[in-house]
Each structure stands twice: as C-alpha cells, then as structure tokens.
Length: 233
Image 1 (tube, rainbow, N blue to C red):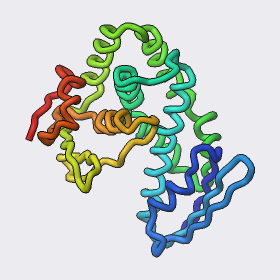
Image 2 (cartoon, one colour; image 1 turned 120 degrees about the vertical axis):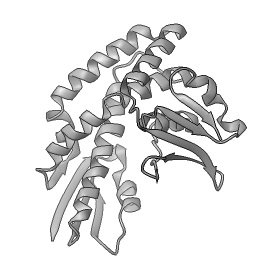
Image 3 (cartoon, rainbow, N blue to C red; image 1 turned 60 degrees about the horizontal axis):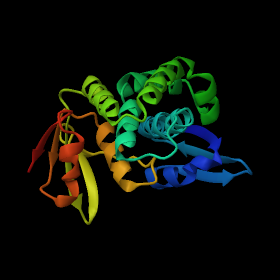
C-alpha cells in the first residue's frame, strides 16, 4: 500500500477536484481544512493510482497555480476574447517540456506541499514564464500585435500530429483528442466559459480543429484563422 498527503492554500479548493477524480472503491480518502489550507490524504493498494494522482497534481501546478502566477504579473485587469486567447496560448506553449520537468519532481514525492513545490522548485520554469509575460505586456493594447504574437505562439507550440474535435453533447461543449480518442478535461481558469473553452482547445495544441456545423462554434473560424487548420464536419 502507498500513501500520499497533499496540502495547498485553500483558495484552490482541491477537495472538490480530488473527490471527482478518484473512485472511492479503489482508495481511502480523507479531506480537511484549516484556516488557510486544504489537506488531503490518500492511500491505496493500486499502484496505477499513484500515476493518476501525479497527473492530477501536475495539472493543478501547471494550470491553476501557473495561471495565478502569470496573471499576477500582467498589465491586463480584465480579459477579453483577444487577450485571453493570447494568454492561454502562452500558458500552454511549452507544456510537454514542463510536464516532464514536473513529473521528475513528483516521482520523488509522497508528501506534496503544492505551494512549497511551486515556490521553491520552479525557479527555472518561472524565468521562462517571466520572459513570456514581458512579451505579453509589451503587446497589450495593440490588437494587431496581439494577433500576430498569438499566431506565432500557437504555431510554434502546436503538435503537428494533434487534431481536436469540438462538438456538443447533452447541451455541453466537448473537446475530443482524435489521435487518442479521449475527451480533454475542461480547463476552468477564467470566469467566462467561452474563454475556458478557448483555453481547453489551446491546451490540446492542435494543428487541425474539426468543428461541428453549429452557430455556437462559428466564432472559432475567425478567432483561429490562419493559426490552425479548421474543418467543419
């Protein structure tokens, strides 16, 4: 049996995240909260769940906590469609390298202070993020520059083998990774669901985006024009 303890500032509300992520029949799970922190304890006989745990922690670190860090350094006070698209492209630009970097750190952990990992083991990553944010701040306020930089970031960071399919099921927007045949988990970092959907698409780093012929999705034809190959189905 393995056991892991995870703590982080309560503003991330990881109790809900972990409760949704794991089948309770396969783990022992406890959650508590102090004045400032959430505390999660997990134990299981299933070694495969340790890998799932690390994937979940990795996403908290490289999506939610990275988003907060980068946003705190930007000039933008309120995102619109244009600025959120550029910000999301920058957020996920070097995703594969960063995931490997963090996986190596997590492979040696059984007690996870997520704030501690983020604050003291991400120095190399933060240098890159600060450079990217300086670029973001330099083009903020110019629609033409924002679009040009967004185009460059998306084209540079995308995986030429990746294709996504944007559709709707049960009234909800769904993004499917067609190469792996799996749904991509929704990214929830913005207050506006439209911006979260854009972020989810950019997290997948597609070369090709297939879109249902649905008026709700037509905005992406203009938003990503000349950035990714878009096909309606």
